[in-house]
Image (tube, rainbow, N blue to C red; front, side, top):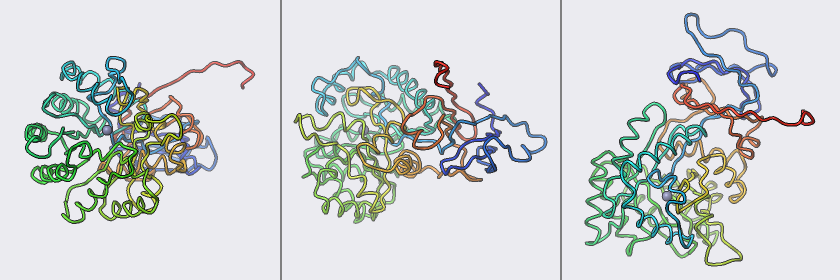
Length: 423
Ligand SMILES: [Zn+2]
């Protein structure tokens, strides 16, 4: 494999999502030039600047895209797999299982599993990951410390953002968890997180989380709700709080499942508030399809937020994988192509919009600079063996080449042998 430190590339004959074929030049971490080709396989005149040694890659047969980024993961729980099982299969069962597993989730254990999961993420094309990490009285800051250390080790390979996911913070009972949250922020967690809908008083919980974020100058990313009860309105409360307070930091609302269960006019009104407040919403189809709707065997709800209404209102809608093979989602594939595919199947989005949710919109939600296939934009790119975006999302081919800041950070090659009949 070409050294990850190589930073000047000429990517020959790459297909782009608009149907064009181009030679794409990467230099100093950026896309330097995009030279459309008159016909497939015809290289543009010229080459890298004199005196610059560039690595040329033939990307014929590959589609070159802005890389996906993961706006919502849980690296502290990733790859627990069969080590921790969810007895009931629902959210309550997952939470019970994970709290029972806390004693075995040491910093070393979290760091090891987190690194393995991130390696898989990188190979699948992710160049940035936002992870939540449990920080509460029962586990303390072990996970935060492990992931802060991992963030440093990965510098230059992938951007890691850490959300301190607090336990109950409301009222007098929340004092111990508030202290762990404050310590987590002091240790280097980037954002304030919590689960207000699971607290006795979601309003009080939101107030504490916003106060903590303001005190520490951080943004907020909250798990809004994971319930198919359409009578839950924490998302609406969040928007009203942001609009009324003028909170300056970025705000992200994750899951927001109940919005997808409300009457269309009710959901649309909240969607407009979300857009007005500049809140990013993160849909998490894999986990919510797994956890929600278990109370019935027929007419199962999809557990997906109202993605179409949110997009129509002009809100930023990102999508992520959430849990990567743990009690909340044993099937996590760590692949944005699966997330985008589910947005098409379960959310009824067009393929192009679905891919924007896991790339462009996810970058916006994470506060990362935009990537376009044009000069001057960051060279955070994924080449995937496919001839079109539809094929890339549907087939999710494992053959991929990943660039982060113009450096090749992962390359997966696959050899398939078939009967000559298949050509
Ligand atoms: Zn989550």
